[in-house]
Length: 288
Ligand SMILES: NC(=O)CCC(=O)C(=O)O
Image (tube, rainbow, N blue to C red):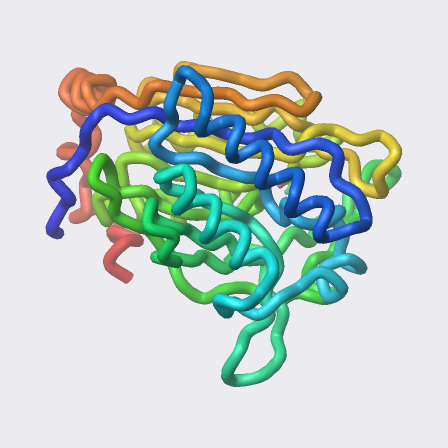
């Protein structure tokens, strides 16, 4: 397996976006302002992340209404590409998209832009959020969405970054495959809810981080109790020893973290599970 040797210190910003309304263009304008604010801060982030479906309220009824094709002239793509170029930063933005060629399936997709504003990667949520906890929460993304079929990462000048979207974090195989592909950081735009958020949001990030000895970040919308879906918030970055480096509260905020490769090196040197796996006893899922 060829691992990317480039892993340099960099700064990550997560935008816990609030003030999401029914107007997509207002949401895009606000998201743009927040990206400009993050980029102008004294922390000078190299990579900025927006939450899952940041351009619309979250809910399966909304997905078809706000969806766009992934094409340069689409409203959200244009905004994300332009602001990445303007701020000279890497940008990850989660949204809903239509498949353009073979059919009209709808996907929950996040797109990635380099500092020239080029679309360099996309990830379609592989595991759809279909849960039913009686009396608490029932949600069925599969009513309107189709699951993606690929794992995805992108290379920057400072790290290899693996992608997942929200519910994808519950599936250790996806994170494990990204880790074996040489990712240093896993990023999940997300929107956990008020039932599973307090129980699992931090636990899952720390679990994926310690399993794979890499950095994990999840970026949520801010909580809005007037919206149909109440997001947990608590955007977070976790290091390879499962320490929480930074955590937002539930309101709109931008949180920043310094990603230090030395933390990954010392975790892997001190607890060398990456070299102690017993593929003579169990299969390597990243090879299947
Ligand atoms: N947007 C999502 O995928 C939500 C996932 C979630 O809340 C969970 O508990 O998992």
